[in-house]
Length: 217
Image 1 (cartoon, rainbow, N blue to C red):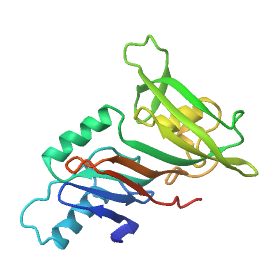
Image 2 (image 1 turned 45 degrees about the vertical axis):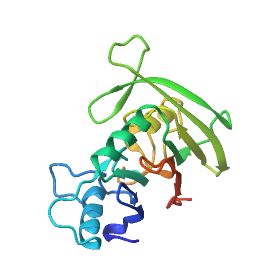
Image 3 (image 1 turned 90 degrees about the horizontal axis):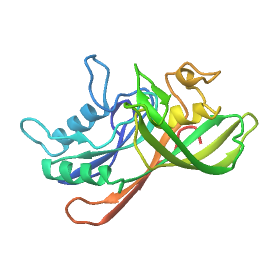
C-alpha cells in the first residue's frame, strides 16, 4: 500500500506494522517539520481503520535519514515489550544491501569493532574504553562493479551508524556517505538499504518475513 512521499506499508495487523522508508525521510519525528515514516503510517492507520484519538505506534528499530528500507513498528504496548525483547536478544533478523567503494579484500567475512556514539557519528574506539560498545556484522559479496561492490550484510548488533562506521573503518565507505569518507554523493541518500526483516510475531508466534528491493540494485 503506497503512501505519500514514496513510503509504503507492507503489512499491518492489530499488533504491528511493517513499512518501507525512502531515502531522505526520518524514521521518527524530530523537532523540525520534516516528514517521518512513523507520522505517515500513523495517519494511514487512522484513516484506514477510522480510529478516533491518538494512534499507538512505536518503532522497534530506526534507519538513518539517508538510508532506505524496512522498519518494524509495534501497535500495542504488549507488542512493543515483546518485540523489544526479541531485539535485545538479537532474535530479529535484519539483512541490508550496501554498495561500498572499491573492492573489499575478502569476498565475505565478519567485522568486529568497538564504537562510541559521538556527535552525529559513530567513532571507532578501543575495547577498554568505558563508553565503547561492541559492534559485529557479517557480510558477503553480491556483485562486483567497476569501482564499487554490492554486499549483503547481516547485523548481529544494532549500534548507532554501525554499518556506515565499520565499512569506513576498513577503507570501504558506503557510496554517497560523505560523513564517513565517501568521495562522491552529497549525503542526502547513501547506498544502504534494509532489504529483509524476519521475526516471530509477538502474539501468534508465527515467523514473519518481509523483503523489499533496494532502489540502487
